[in-house]
Length: 256
Image 1 (cartoon, rainbow, N blue to C red):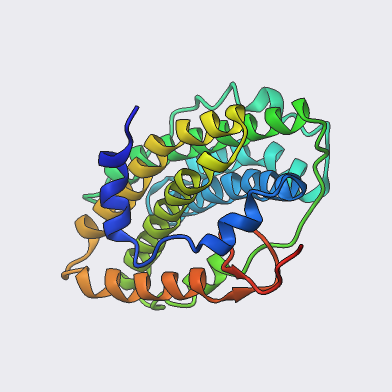
Image 2: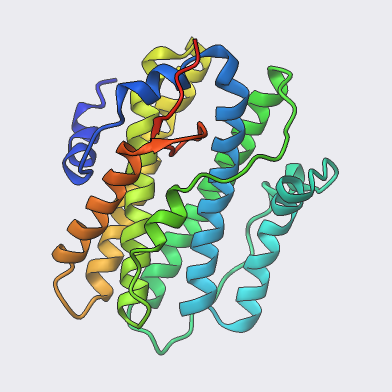
C-alpha cells in the first residue's frame, strides 16, 4: 500500500523530518531492545495523557476513577517491572462506559476521541510487548527522553490556553511518531517493518483528532500556537541528544 497520501499532511504539519543520523543509529540491531522498550513505554504515556485530559476536563468522578483503573496494570508493569501486573488480561477488558459532564459543549467529542486513543495505544503497548517476548527481549526500566518535557515547557499556564496547548502538543507527538514509524520501517526486518507500517493510520488519525479538538475548543485562531509549538518540536528533534530514544534528537555520539 502507498502511504504517501497519508504521510503528506504529516510532513506538511511537522517543521522538519527525522535526521538521517537518528535513523542510522536507531536501525542498528544492538539498539533494537532499547528502541522497542521506549516505544512500548511511549504507548503507555500516550494513554496516560489522554486519560489525564478526560479526568481533568470532561469525566464525572466515578468515570474518572474507572478509566484510571484501566491503566494501573500497565503502569505496574512499567514502573515496578511487575510481570504479574495483569495487563495481559486487562487489555481485553477496556469496556466500562465513561460518562462526560454535560456542562461542556465539546465534552462528548473529547471523550469519544480520547477513549478510542487510549484503547488503541494500550493495544499497541501489548503488541510491542508481544514482539519483545517473541525475540527474547526482557523489559528493563529506562530513563525518559527530554522530548515530551521539552514540548510541555511551551504550554501556557492559564485556561483555556493550557488545554489548547496540551492538545497541540499531543498532535505533534502523534505526528512525529507516525513520521518516525515511516522513516524507520524501510530499515527494519520484515516483521518489524510490517508492524510499524500498520501503526501509521492510527497515529495519523490521533494527530488529526488532537488538532481538531484544539481548534474546536479554542476561542481564538490556533495557527500562531501551532506554529510556535511546532518550531519548538523541530528544535528538540534537530538538537543533539545524549541518549537514543524513540523521540530523541540527533545522537551526540556516533557509535562505530
